[in-house]
Length: 328
Image 1: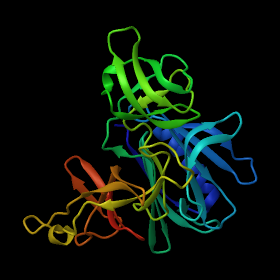
Image 2 (image 1 turned 180 degrees about the vertical axis):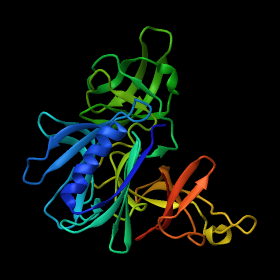
Image 3 (image 1 turned 90 degrees about the vertical axis):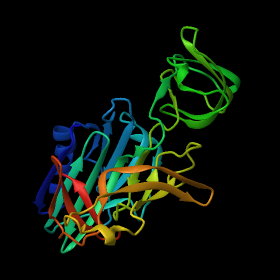
Image 4 (image 1 turned 90 degrees about the horizontal axis):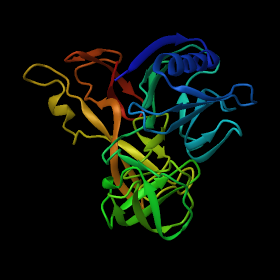
């Protein structure tokens, strides 16, 4: 997995944004999908197909008018020609990076083609921000529609692989304009192309639309990540820009104080950060953050390096969520 990290002392916001653009595009391999740096509120939209090459990840970083922050949005799709997105996810007072407009701060950048995790040190306080794909607990397999389809009942859709589906189960279908939850009532794995029958289709979809258990679990995180996040979609599709909210919590069971440091060898234990949706009408454990782990903090100081086999992790005591270790 081409995973990368970088760190530097930064004099101001503009230097940081230039470094972020360079890191994501030239080092990690994201595409600068839409450069709107000349706008009154400059912004950059980055696109990635993920480590698998089959994902759709759009993240927008905005130099907005608020002081000491860079705002972050996630999108189902972004049209670079019209400079407009479809089905965005964000929260105006939360999904941003804590930085300094015109004063020195330290940053650490961690990313692969699935996600980016950013730590900034403002004075003596560390802030984390996670955006991008979740490591999903559901299947990442998708079938592609082989022709455009229109809304209706008992809609037969040609797909490249109908064997991915079970009859009478629900899945998500999405393209660059819409997303919804559908029930598959029949499948044909013999015909060429294969077909699936959808009980009710509310929207029309273009050829190349994706159908699967959990396509595009992309989130924009709070300035106190791991913590609250806003997702591009949920199990039944899209509600609105802040309708798919959730939270990340460490899978420690409060046991970190019992094993950090471990009494046998004095080692630190890394626990995953789980990601769940926690709206009143929608509660689901959806996945976990990528290469960000909870630790107890009893055996380290911030910025210490932990070694786990051939890999190294840097410890931070983040404002809000507390101690974590991030893969270097």
